[in-house]
Image (tube, rainbow, N blue to C red; front, side, top):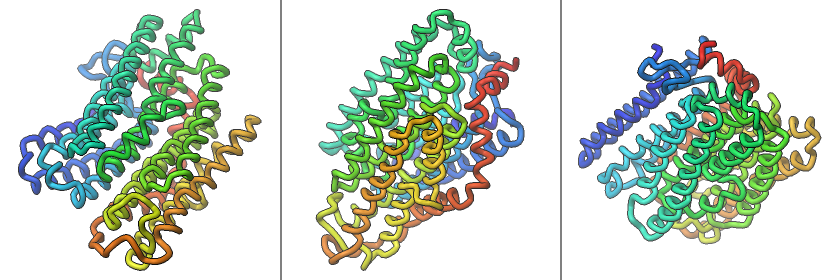
Length: 490
């Protein structure tokens, strides 16, 4: 079972390759895809259990010991993110079966769906900074295809913009990795943590840290690097948008969380202060966009930006409590953003539009859909006992303890604005006179949404069950020596 941590990478890779041979057999593609998704979930659950009972799991590829070879590392943070990714992927897969259409299914949609998961799970699992770049590229190349598949004008336009931004960020990523290797002589993350502490010229490391912050900020859509997100995420179909919204920016957040707790913690007073101010700017931009738009997609897209700001601000505080809040909030936000995009996808299917002022009265025909919007609003805003509460509460409490009262106030106010932004969908779209739509059959679309909503409710109500796992993840983030000893076997 030493190879257990590679299964969440191997299973989607094999599934993607097998699906290529069934490009014209849609029924076979769906069956294979379901087996692949269930296999990922099972392997991820086993991995979480193994890490919980036995500690950090490592795998030296080709039996080359760290730091000389490529090492995969699965601590509790990585394992929980992989499990959450697997669950979200399954929900988006079920939604794709009913909505994506044969025109996309015949052109390797499901193959690239799984190649995307290879990149995401690989990024969460790798213990090598260069291989983090490699898995980023696997993820990005797959996302290009999923974004453009369908060939509409808006897809082509936004894919070009998305590719240009990511080509630039990828080039900057390679440059940053090259500088880091030149200074430290290693690429293994655990070994980097050791070597960074030994470098005499700490100022050069601060410059490199800022370069990585720009790279991961572009990936995670932090202010002022968020500019590409609203346009790019408005282009793909709802199933792809839900997958992107739940996972892609979170890989950027994870990268900041991992590197700025393990590697770049030599000058916290400078680098993390910059991160804090960028985070506050991200929150402000996110909530302004969320309350300003009446386009369903843009409302939720700007909520992604606001949530990213909350998480990165928790990282910037660098306390056990703030990091715990960040992990709690990261996990729930992955699920809730996916849920919200699936919900607005159903609304757009029923009404034929994403414009909130063109329909109303959904509660009369689709009461379950309306109450799903209501529950999602409460969860996204962090209203207790839903899952968003505990993460924000820990971050705000840590902010108060650190004397950052203004930042804490911004986060608290952002919750109110997030609640307002989603509640206006509930009030204006679900209540009032019935107009702008005709009744359609959508019962099958409720299944993935109900599954994810149930998960986030259980996550909030059963927080005492989840907390030991999160605490185990935080112990590694707060004490890099645990990670270093597990990887380098010192």
